[in-house]
Figure 1 (cartoon, rainbow, N blue to C red):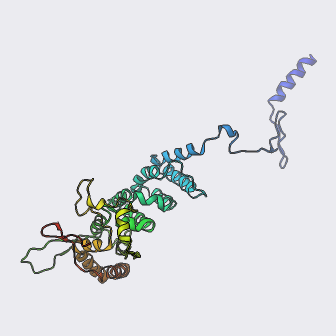
Figure 2 (tube, rainbow, N blue to C red):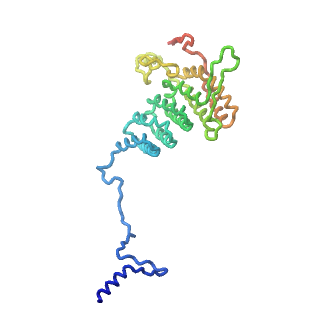
Figure 3 (spheres, rainbow, N blue to C red):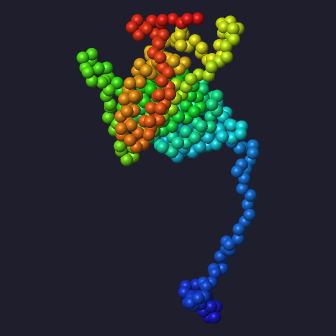
Length: 349
C-alpha cells in the first residue's frame, strides 16, 4: 500500500503548479544549459588559399554584373571596378578597350547613382588609354546629351567635361566630333537658324521652346549647358603650339613617317566619303570656318537673349560670350573651299 501511495504522490507532483513569491527568481529546470559563455574564433576571409577565387576571374565577374537588372548590383559592381583601377599599380586584366565596350552603354542608365559611379570609374582610367577611343566615346556622350530624360542630359554634360579634360585636343579634331556636338548643343539649347526668304527684312533668328527652363527642378540645366558649350569652344579655338622650323625640316617631313595617327585620314582615300558633319577638322582655322558658317549667328543671338534673362543664365551667357570673343576675334573668312563649285582652291607649298 505504501508503494502505491508514493507513486501517486510523485505523479501528482508533476502536475502541481509551484507558488512563486514576489522578488524570487524562477527556479531553473533540471535540464537547462548555460549559454552565457563566449568562445574565441579566428575568422579568415579565405579559409583555403588554393580554393580562393582568382583576382582576374573576380574582376570579370563584377564586370558581368554591370549589366544586371538590379540598380544596386550595377552600382556596386562599378564601385568595385573603380577601386581596382585606383590601386597602385592599377588592376585591369581585360584592358581598356574591353572595359569601355561594356561600360559606355551605361552612360544612359536610368539610375542616377549608377551614372554617378560610372563617372567616378571613368576618371580612374589613364588618359593615354582614352585618346584612341575618343570618337566612339563621343557617340555615347551625344546620345546622353540628347536623351529624353533631363537627368541623363545633365550627366551627359558631366561626361563631356571629363572627356575634354582628358583628351580635349583629340575630341575637337576627331571625325564628326566638332560639328555634330555643336549641332546637339544647338538642339538642347533651342538655338536654331532658319533660312529666311530673300524678300524678308526680318532676321532669320528663331528660338525653339525650352520646356525645362524656369522649372524648379531643372532651372540650372540651361546655364549648365551654356557653360559646357563655352568650355567646348575654348578647347576647339585654342591656338596650337608653334613648332620650331629649320630648313632641313622640309625634306624631313617628306621622307619621315608621320607621327600623328591616321595623318592622311582627312583625304578619305580608303573610307566612305563624309559629309560636312563627319569631317575631320584638325586645325583651329578649319574649326573657326565651319563654326562661322553654321553656328555663329545662332550662338550670338542666343547669348544676347540669355543675357537679358539675368541670374544664373545671364552669368553663364557672359562666360560663353567671352569664350566666343576669345576664339573668333582673330577669325578671317578665307576659306580654302569654294562654296559655289565645291572645289579645293589648293595649297601653296
